[in-house]
Amino acid sequence: MKASSPSHRSSRARRILLTAALLAFAGLAALGIAEVVLRLVPIPGITYHSFYYDPVTGGKYYPKTTLMYRSPDGEQVVRHANAWGFADVDHEIKPAPGTLRIGFFGDSYTEARQVPLEDTFFRVIEADLNDRIPQLVGETNRRGEPVRHVEAISFGITGRSTLQSYLECTQWMEKADLDAVVYVFVENDPGDNIQPMRGSDAVPVAELAGDSFVVDTSFNQRYGHKTSWWHRAMQRIKANSLVVSTVEGRLKLLKRHGIKRTVTEADRLGGAGGGGVTMVPSAWPQNLVEDGWTLVERILDTWSHYVTSTGREFAIIRVPREEVITAPLAGQDSWAPRLHAYCARRNIPLIDPTPGMIPHVQRGEKVYYDHFTSLGHRVFADAFVAYWLERDMR
Image: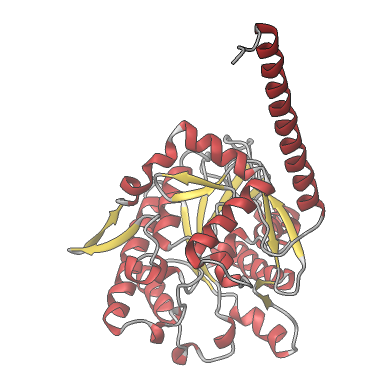
């Protein structure tokens, strides 16, 4: 057989390289077109996977990434993570002179992705308190400066437990020089604290230990590889690409459920964010109810002391559960009676927006829809503003 000449081999190599280059270009062009289409045409279940692994709390969002929420009736809300990885406006690390900073910590109710940013309770609180600066005459911040401006900051992340919110606070309270810390208590938070109820092994959980508690951080042994530069780089690409996020999500669904003709919302969520944790105490295994609540109290004891020992204010504002909001407190199948009793014993301010919400509920106005509606955020904010303006007179 006659051997091919060097020129022939060179020509064939060039054709192979050209073909490979054309295929690569076509593939990139197809991905680019798909990215544009997914961004322009909202498809249910399609969202950016913006998770950023954090070895202390479990995770937050990649800074400056897009957060998409689609309501049960198809309405879409697009928000963005700030430079700190939270669904809020950007804030400087060092507060401006004369600024009073209030940090809100909690789960999806604090993150509040279901409404436009300007309708969230923390943005409403900031605007309302700044409109009432004359009523704050004589008030100073921790630095001894007369208050000329109020800054509300959200540190909320979907699925957060009491423990995770406390741990997040330890990362930001001193760094951001907060004057006040507010925990937004939601009724699934107690279940999110403990492994038997939460189910996820990718976050820190708490366990009773003597007269205190310990934090189980073994999730870092399982997922510590997510701090590597390679994983961070791939996650950042995914956090900014709907195509990559969608492919990854569909592969996970295929692995978890096999081939299905239809995909439900539960399939898409896969229990993410702690959404599967029951809020109803009577639905808990009875052997966990007392221990679960004792754990909440011990975390709050530690958290409140951590905050107040540095001269800052600590308060709790609770989210009433929709289905029991009009029921007498004492008879509610909720954690609210225990929370009220605990705060009274410890002299911790508890803001309960229930009285302001009930009239709207009774008139048939939408306070809740999935989470709070814009009206719900307004009423929630009103309760906090009223507390803040009156607190020095108590």
